[in-house]
Length: 197
Image (cartoon, rainbow, N blue to C red; front, side):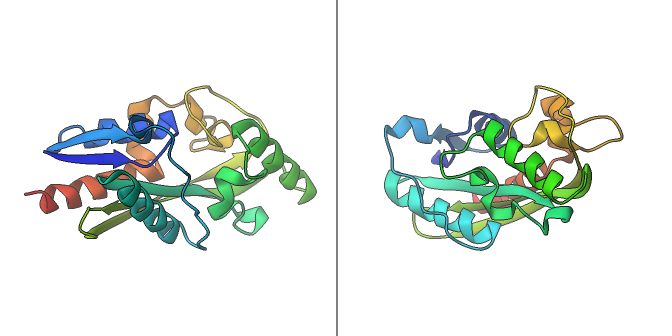
């Protein structure tokens, strides 16, 4: 059985990926299983390139096949920001709270209270021999100034996918059906299933 490390320290992402990949002939491990590892330097301009950098880096660090994602929020009123800088929007050591504060401040500066937005996700599987698979997904919604829900992470409480529901109000199953990561994961599961035959 192939050992695959999921290149994230985010427990929410890890849970989603373990659930999606659970039926494949792989043993899923997390970065935490390898002790203190350095961070990959994600300095590319696209989600796909950042995911590729991370997958290669952690494959080399751990000696295991690796799945890495880069995902983020693109807000129309902010010219597509935060984009590839979503996780570090408020600075290198930002957390969900400070990133969301900055998002709301930027919307106020732009003179809007809501904006069309989308979540993007690029996933890369990198095997130990350098073989690569990649998949992507997108979820459209609206960013509003009012937070609702506690199930999600990141910008989920402000990302409305229905008239009155945010991503943070959805169950894991509902979120998986419509989310950018869910779409990318379904495609990756399909690709990996064929690859591992």
